[in-house]
Amino acid sequence: MYLILQKEDEKMPLSMVKEGETNIIKKVGGKEETRRFLENLGFVVGSTVTVVSEIDGNLIVNIKDARVAIGKDMANKIMV
Image (cartoon, rainbow, N blue to C red; front, side, top):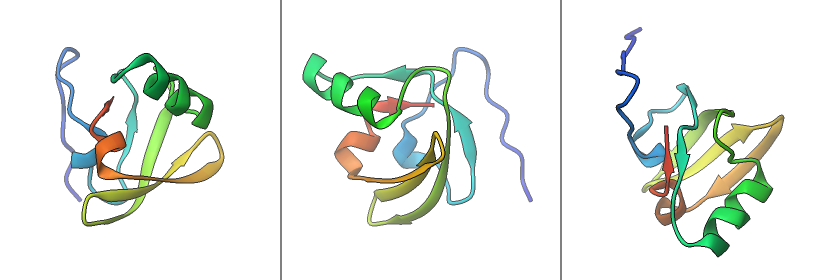
């Protein structure tokens, strides 16, 4: 098992996270409507998110005790 260490100011999109990895959300980007939609699903700064599976960039994640499927375009707006 490999541990990837990131500096405090480094961010990467959720779409780049490997299956099984848990990360902390650092920023939610996009238009106001998109940010509000993602926040209603539980994607808020400081929350932990775990990638359950990934198919063609689309993700199934665990967030706030729920399993959520999001597309690659939405996953690119969530920085961890």
